[in-house]
Length: 285
Image 1 (tube, helix red, strand yellow):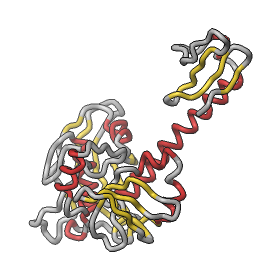
Image 2: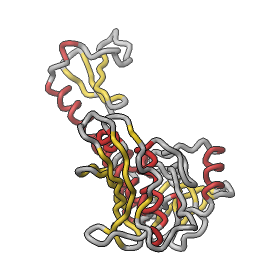
Image 3: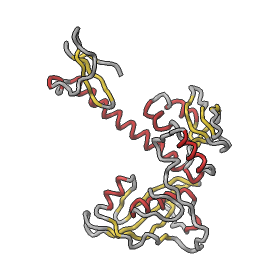
Image 4: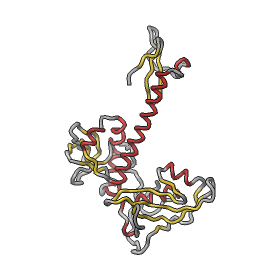
């Protein structure tokens, strides 16, 4: 943003999310000062700029959270919506370089630009920049990307850094030997976790209710909740993990064979993050 005059001696602006000042006048160097002058610390204009910085931080976090939800649930997003939000730096920062699929789900590419009319410019696996004009675009969960290994390798070659965990999100495939009647995963049962498991769960973005940690996924037209039980006598005591299960929100507990690939992967990712273990076909979260 530009510089705002404050009094006769200084101008203020936002730089990397912080309020900075510079001197004005014939002998001023024009560079931001290392610290905010004492005379400005209680200034009303400085306070308003601080509030703006805090709002921008919250806005950026909200954009990241919303795009992360789109990725986790592999939701189709109208390209008209992408066109409206793309000019906003916070939205653009969250969306840029994510892998997108068009209406037909073919030829994944890295999102580089969205035009005013909703056309997408993406870089495909051949290294070509192509223009797509779908009605909606899907930001798929990694378990829904058949070319995941190739996409990861190509992203490393291009030094692509995604703000949202997508390509390098821990992904777990369902084992082929699940029994029809089983409803729980017991791989983590009895694992002792250091103190403050509930606080740790919250930092990962999971919900804590009573003696269980949960995460939700929208998949196949329903909201599925993965839940891991734990025993913790006191807030700061060690916790012991219990069974992991899945259920439809406000509905029945699911048999393991009934769980979709995304809900399975996210549940295992949650359990692995809480336990600090590496299991199955996934990676440490």
